[in-house]
Image (cartoon, rainbow, N blue to C red; front, side, top):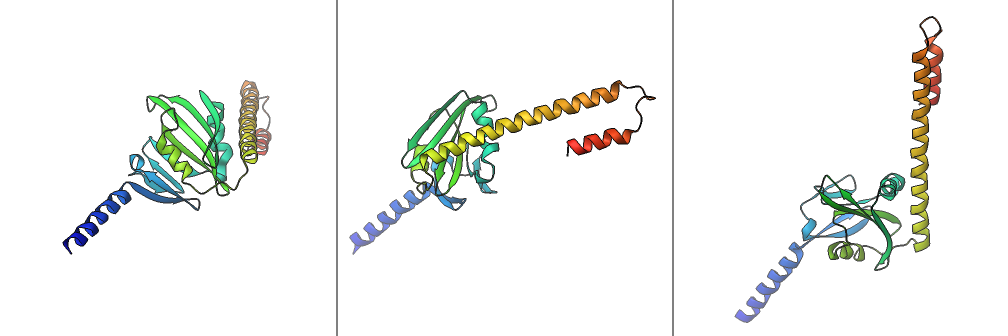
Length: 198
């Protein structure tokens, strides 16, 4: 009888230890097991984050905005497979964390997720997190094509914004260079600005 109680007690301890080393969170309809190294963070607005060291989020609503900056401003990038998941990995030196910071975009179910962490390599914890997520329902070629298209859209948006700012600065310079007598009706300039820049 004592042996049976001891076995139950030891089993309970082992199960408790195994459970304590993992935290499961749901993001965008998928469950993720957060490794102990990255636990203690906050789940808010479909994103789990721990200081500036780690975050995971679903980026379906803004793939262009999320991947675009990293695709344009990286020191290193690679396309790899981790388990059944296509992954695009970016890395860049970040002066705020005084080291390398990585972003991995991967497909799980029908969604695209972003994991960011401090470090250059995809460590075992990140790899395990991706492998244990639901299998990708997005084909590899479609996934990479969608990311490439998002990067192209992001670049075009940046160019359009720069062109818009340049045009606005040109109009403002013309307006400011005119004398008060030659300006005419300010309403015309306001109409131009409101029409083009709203």
